[in-house]
Length: 408
Length: 172
Image (tube, rainbow over all chains, first blue to last red; front, top):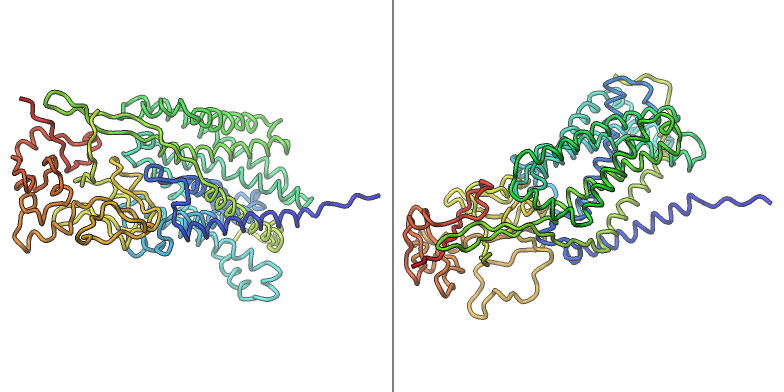
């Protein structure tokens, strides 16, 4: 007797909708009671939500890399991943915006940075870049939506707009690449300029952020394409293209690791008050395991080795494992910078000498435990992203291409 | 280590002002006091991460329970801040602002001196203009040369130029 296949699509959809429903309930709690329902406090002001934002944005870096490779460098070989990369990028940014709305204290004032510009703020620049880039991603996905059956049948104007945009795509793609490069680095600068946190305050922060994002961006495309291939039981993107992507990611990953190693050594070149003390304190906590075990070994060296050896890289399982590990390493990097950077606080006071005061500084480690509301909203946002992607795969021509050249 | 009170240091070069994306926190032109516009604050908390002194507090929830800091007598001078914005010490600008029109001197006249200075029973807190007079309404003035010579700023090495000075006790 033939075994009946599990209704995978239904199970998947129901699971996502359940997660989304829990997230919506958690969001209601936040709006009703305020951010008191989170585990954040006046010292650890940013928690796993900001970590999630940073990770979503970095994992979406594949979108700007793919449009750069296809539109600017004209590498036709990578055209099959362009559409899925852009959809992943758009979903990543939408997830970021959703989480940010939950995270800021006054969500109804989200547009204030535009009408009351704080031009000297890194965050203001990020606001602008994310807005511009999300718009560009919408424009870049518009032709794909226009090509879909529903649009062609019911909303022909979408198809017309899409076609017009497609003809001028190189302009939008270039603007998008610039905006993306700017804020991927600025997200590091967001931390790098803060004198109050010695473990953040270093000029290498923006560079580390952008290189790690460029290493992990292609990995997201690889992982998502491979899972989609498995789910649809057909090869949506040819393996050769994915192997090539893995190779690109591997090169950037090695560059990132070299730079990170240099950064760690160079931190010792000059003394910045409290930096070594805080790092010493952190190395006694879970941070040690997350940094050396997670970020460096599991998320850096192991995937770099897999991606460097063709015999390992050119197997689906090897490529998939390496890509997942790079993504995990990136998320841990963002988590360690954001959460542990804030948890490493300090007490400042004075010693009382005879008739004089001498500075007293001592690093302390502050507790931060995310509440279930934070996890629920994180899960809801991820479920939202996965749901949008599922619908995209179902209704958009993501992996089919009309015979045409790249627009110019 | 000694226990000290840490109000907002009212830095000459405040890191919190530079990072605000909505221009909600700024230095007043007249006296350089760093204030927050609670109607503009988005609640992103970047300024709290940027403040080396932990002088900023976020309203994680709507303040509803009885405020122990509001006295049983009289009326509060400032409204409570709404949920979702950052707040901090303002050197009691609602009092200082009355100084010019009433021709009063902060640090001498209690009406225009910050509340924490007025209620300090030992005169440990003093207030005033470092280019003018500094003192406590009840306990008298402190020569500004003494503050300049012996006053110590917290985390001076960060270059924020705090305008709160800590004076060591005088030994005989």
